[in-house]
Amino acid sequence: MHISTDDHIIAKIRKSKSKKFFFIDDFITIANYKAINKALERLVERGVLRRIAKGIYARPKVDPLLGEMLPTTEQIAEAIAKRDKARIIPTGVYALHMLGLSTQIPMNVVYLTDSSARKVKVGKQTIVFKKTSPRNLAVKGKISSLVIQALKSIGKDKVSDEDIATIVKRLKKEDPAIIESDIAYAPEWIRKIMKQAL
Image 1: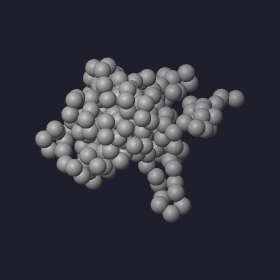
Image 2: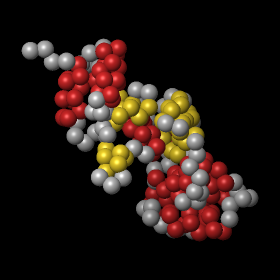
Image 3: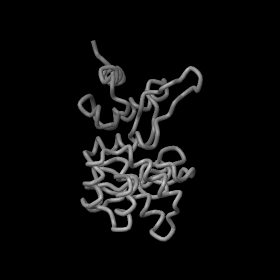
């Protein structure tokens, strides 16, 4: 009995229970790129998958009250980084937003990466991956990496006492040993702020 490309893909999706995102490369052992592309288009039409961005798909997640739940920008960026075996750090307005220092959600979400520079369009938003030096990605802590990028975005002379209080409060949730290690990668004026959390 001949099993269609669509059924092969559905079987693979069902087996990968914990996987949230799927890329064309995940199915390359089943058929060639063109056939997989066509099959994925059909599965999107059937509602089996949702196309998140070019070449990126996810299972539709429906909440009984809220309806369809779309993945967050952060989840999509992390899935791309995982696939590319790359490190990423959010920067600028998005880092400020993630720390609660800004209510603004940027149309361009910028991440530093050690992988190739690229742009991924997700609905009305664009995820921008900017290639950077390994030093900028050496920071281990999730909160401390956000703090360094957010403070660089605000600027030394524009950071307020209120911003510092929020940052110190957030940093207290980070492991002190990680903060101590990450301080070395921050400019001197940011180090002084980070030390307040220790």
